[in-house]
Amino acid sequence: MGFRILTLNNISVRGLERLPRESYEVSGEIGKPHAVMVRSADMHHTPIAPSVLAVARAGAGVNNIPVDSLSARGIPVFNSPGANANAVKELVLSALFLAARNICQAWAYTRTLQGDDAAIDKAVEAHKKEFVGFELPERTLGVIGLGALGMKVLGYDPQITVTRAWQLSSSVQQALSLDDMFARADIISVHVPLLEGTRGLVDAARLRLMRPGGAVLNFARAPIVNERDMVAALDSGRLRAYICDFPSNALKDHPRAITLPHLGASTVEAEDNCAIMAADTLRDFLEHGHIRNSVNFPEAVLPRQGGSIRIAIANRNVPNMVGQISTCLASAGLNIAELLNRSLREYAYTLVDAEGSADEKLMQALRSIEGVLSARLVRVAD
View (cartoon, rainbow, N blue to C red):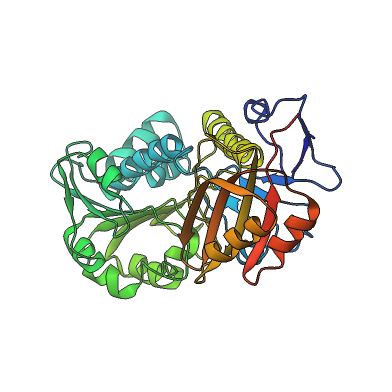
């Protein structure tokens, strides 16, 4: 059997090439898809077919995907964490220079100059002091969500893993809290997903903690910064600059704001990397039942070492679920060779390799267990 993949955006060819043509049908118009690949298309009002087993986002944010409703159906949502990191990093570095040297404001000023070259030279000399900036060495950069350019770097990320911590430069100091970071940093750069707990994370109270003349960079999501509070801080002159990837009527013409048209991941390389990661993750799930880079289900990888069949089960994280699954398999005469059960908050995922054969009657029995959201027999694509 082959797999049918519905694409809701133009997906990089380099990513789609990871799905073999002999076993995958990929199209923007396809019936009864097994999976959906998406970039920025809004899926909240898009009917999602009963046949869909997974959704893969070629990018990091999943705000355009109805994660909660898909979770309730046992459908994992995958994203591509880190695939566009270099593109965002380069844009953030450029934003640091824009903030420090008033480059955009100075350029805008020169485009208003009139008269002959002598008049322009005279005007430039008279007004260049209006665009005096500062140099980055000895300044402090605060990174929310974890030195660069001679700067002292503070990092704050309560969810950082041990593996990620080992990858950080020894020059990066840990802030004790967000308030501690805002009080110590000259420039704050935001790198966290938009969640209920991060909405309005940068607000008036935290902006007041910053040193006068500071700057905020936001290439994560617009609502993480309280826009009204940001405009007030810019108007008062306490904050010298706000640079973000999210234009709005309140910000796009503000003399202290630089708003870019959501360029964070807009490079050919980033689009390729995101599509490749999404396709690889999706293929691993469809063919082997493995879960990696999911935002709603736990990571679950079980190398095939035994058993003639593999069953993948998504369920609510409730007591005795593994026991009920095992009993159901035993009643069908299946002997468990390997079993992996992982949980993430209210959801769990189980992979079972078993000896024997499975029919639709067994699969229906598994699906009828209270708390089971989905169950499928995993077959390698033909």
